[in-house]
Structure formats: structure tokens, C-alpha cells
Image 1 (tube, one colour):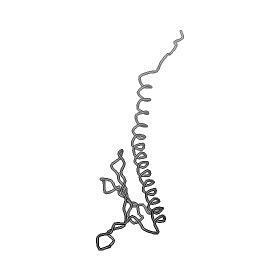
Image 2 (image 1 turned 90 degrees about the horizontal axis):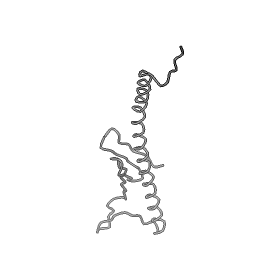
Image 3 (image 1 turned 60 degrees about the vertical axis):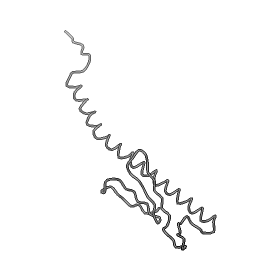
Image 4 (image 1 turned 30 degrees about the vertical axis):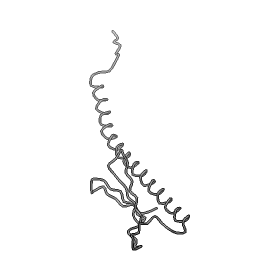
Length: 115
């Protein structure tokens, strides 16, 4: 007598579900981390674009930069720019040509030199 086996056993289904669950547990946190890296890269690119516009302004206006002065003609500060992204809690700031990206977590704060 020949038996035709159609379908999977319960053990086979449970093993496949366990493997898929393990792969998902590994992949999802990595995906979330890569999205944050992409947001930071976009913010850094925006800061570089802002710096290019500031340099173009200086070139078009005989070396004048977007720097604040008080009533005594003393320079208050060099220009700074801060960018944020709606999808992340991180923000990046450019000050004196250096880009600093920060989060609410002190351990993930980093300074990126100008490239």
C-alpha cells in the first residue's frame, strides 16, 4: 500500500517559523539603524549645501559673509546652521566648518570634520 504524503508536518512548519522569526529579529534593528544613518547623511549634505551658498554669497558681495555684528561693529559670532529631520530625534549643526550631530543619547554624539 502506497501513501501519498501531501502537506507539511507540524514540526516542519514550526521550524520554518522559528527560522523566519530569528532572521526578522536580526534584520529589523539593522534596518532601523540604517534609516537613521541615511537621515544623518541627508542632514550633513544639507549643511554642506548651506555652506556652499554662504561661500557664494561672500564671493558675490566682495568677501562679506553672513556674520552678525553689534552696534559697535564688533563681530558677534560666525554663522552657524542647524538642521533637523522629522523622522529622527537627531540634529546636526555646522559651526566654524565642523559638523556636529547629536541625539538625546550622549553616547551617540559625534563630530564630523569638514570634507
